[in-house]
Image (cartoon, rainbow, N blue to C red):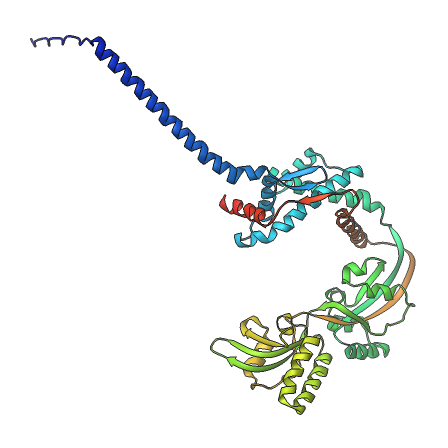
Length: 427
């Protein structure tokens, strides 16, 4: 059998040893407590810094609309929502727009309540769930504003727009220059077909699509469709069947222009050139300006150079070169085919003929307008009523910013807007 191991006698601590051991334990507890206190102090310091730098600003009021306040956290949420899908470097471009969207949405909510129009949380939640996929509650205020706008349009402004009114059956086309408009007018007076001519020559998209026949329209609609009051002003003041003289419209934009180009230097390898250019609104205008330039060249090269700069500043619609007297260092890949082809093939210092370019936009042109019928009390089409309601609503909303009693304040400076963008990009 194995021998049983002898038990070791228990070690008894002397009073002196026990006292020393207890003091040692106490020191360890003190050191441990001090260490924990230091760690806590560090964490509080670091955490406080993070809080003050990143989270405290989120509670700061940045926008006030009357008695309603919006903090930085809300602004960042809305900036992130509206900026979804926008590249990070472009997000800053939305910062002011989002401020106005928040202000406008709150003004609409407050003013709609005064008119007895509101949208409940239950209605908003139901609308959020109706989307595919459903929208999160982050979209609640945006959707509420959209629903309020819809209710205002139908329940308030819908009552202000009549269901019937005097209307006129209107024909119109927009042409590039006075001589063209005069020639077309002569053709129409001689029996030409208005719609056929308009479908080919009109430079206004709406008139071209409708082949010049704008149909029955009440007052207030054509400015919304055409972006000008001139057609409506003539149509509601003329006699039936009267074809207008060419009506000058200096601000209407059209998708065509005419270049005058003189190539000074060309770098075919780099695909660039140094040129003198002008962009004119019509072939007629371009020809007139070219005639003036030719006359100056006869008088002398120095004078010709000075005249080009003078005429460019007066007539050119090319913003990048206008203030430089027409001088333009151009990368040809950025220009339309007509511009590029001439610049690559032309002899140096030879002034071009007018070059038509359908890839640019210029201002100015002439309207021809005719009223074929008048009805003193005709039912307004739903399309036109919707346009009139939308126009009244838009004017009402824009007017809220300047309405007496409304106080709107934004505390967002450039630094705070940059903080918001940085916060989003850092998430």
